[in-house]
Length: 379
Image (cartoon, rainbow, N blue to C red):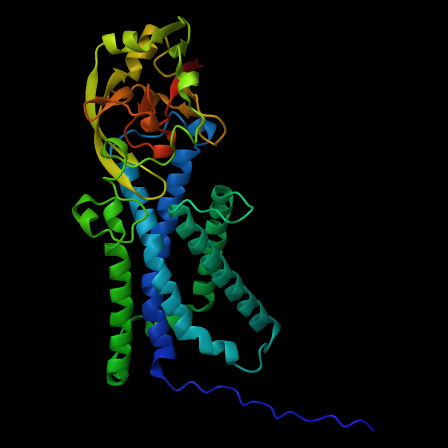
């Protein structure tokens, strides 16, 4: 008979601290839920501004001019703030991983499965979003589509979790006399530490879109003043394949009922307009700048375009997802929308879209098409 050693069964860990209770989890969960809600709503706005359905293209508003700057800044700021909140929330509830039996019933199994989906989706959503802010994509799937789909998974899982835990949340939402008696320095210190972490992350990053705090934006991926002509650049001319040879003999083609072409000197000879508009990137940074150029609506009027017509903007950019964009009539006819030729009183730098680029109010930076070579009137 072969001898089989009997290994002693390790006892389950015992958690005695008050910081792993329902009250602490609820307090942290409230803040996390608010951050996720802001992030989700602003993410939906960003998605539909970048990729509006055909019927909505002419309905998107061009005002307020700072609209996208605000919503996308909130999107990135709330997503970053959610990271320490998620870690704190997981720390308060992780002892439940050691509860025995692991599964008590079919309903309990489904509850644990839903929590696993929620935690996995939240961590993946925040992780990929964080790496997007620094333009690092070490995964094989398309970021934008997966990020969008995960947002709905997170939201659905969170709503299900809230519904299941509603009695526990309700019982611990407000402080009571009994809770005050148990509210020791440990919990207050823990919640203060979590608040400090969220505040530090926010203060050290939000300056990339909120000017008064730009000097303390030590952890922000982009500083709004760093770049050619004092403005950051997401994609350079070299990365877009726009070379000096390709720009040789450049002309702007305007295709419409009365099609025509213009050289750069002819564009500069037209009436020039100056505006102050922000460039707001999907990565969260934004910056006001002084732009000078020709109103797009003047170019459309010369081409005989109908007042409600959309336009297709075509870039010299090779590859990428935004070499062609469609602009609705609300943007195209806005007096602030320019085919910009200058930035800060100087001709556009190549990396900012020289010889001409689009700048429009309340529009994502990826749709402020650079290296424009053609405007097409769409019926």
